[in-house]
Length: 114
Length: 114
Image (cartoon, each protein chain N blue to C red):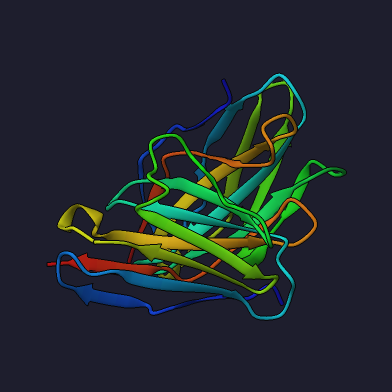
């Protein structure tokens, strides 16, 4: 149980385009989902926390207009990187939490912006 | 401020040898503690967690960890490692007073050599 999927697993796009990443909890309902960014050989950096049906809470320094988060249902959250630029290239990982304290992570999405 | 320190950035070890990955945290309130493993180009998988109860926690893949409140530590151990244990290991803490966000260590790269 507690499986989280992400789609796509990797994406290459041109600078200036927008990219949408989906995060799904497959066998449980996630009241809260988290979006992280990870640079090579580094730990995870929390970008935002989203609760179903409400606006996401962004961490300091994360542009909310740049990284649009939607959590429309208890099993789906999306992250849209708008007008992507090469510096947005990274590994994006989502996690989902049900009622307890444990976060379950997706497999990640590698984004490369050319 | 809460923090998590993983004392070793890299741990090389020979196959079938025991290993200990160290983790210390700073917090003035109750905490929940987690160890996650990340295999190359993948998301994070929960190894084990301490929420309450017995301070010795057993996880998947033969790993265990012991919560030591007086030393504010949560070291991860395995009595005999395999090549397949080669991965990045992250210690993380949830502080009862920080709106349940995970505070991450910088990770320990475990390299198991034949």
